[in-house]
Image (cartoon, rainbow, N blue to C red; front, side, top):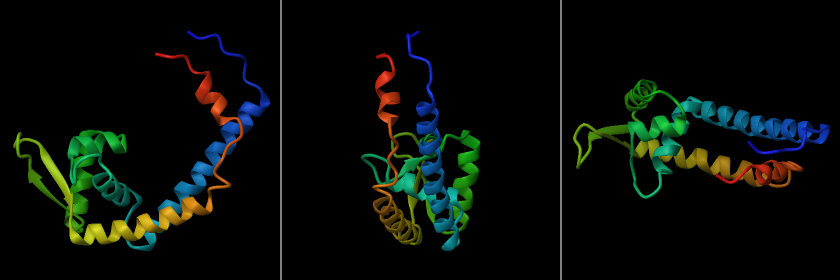
Length: 144
């Protein structure tokens, strides 16, 4: 256990400001997805498939990890995205029990549109989405 100094008012203010700015961005993201007829979770599935490092697909297990949900929840979400024409599923090449999820042309088009909106929003927040003293939280942790 590390010996950290007690929390001060400025620490609470920094945490509060960070959560506020984060929630503002998440609210923007929710509204943007809904404006094109997707749920926020549909958008996240598309984003995590496209954004998974080193491959143009993701497994259901990888999506569950990225979404921080149970495997069966990710399966149900992928099923809804598949029904909406956003993704396709196929068995894995090395392990046929593994399910690979890929974007359809429709899914890719929706994702690109939403990602552009998100990139623009992040750029507009570049001077706002900064929290004083947040690096103090990052720097105070012990090395593992």
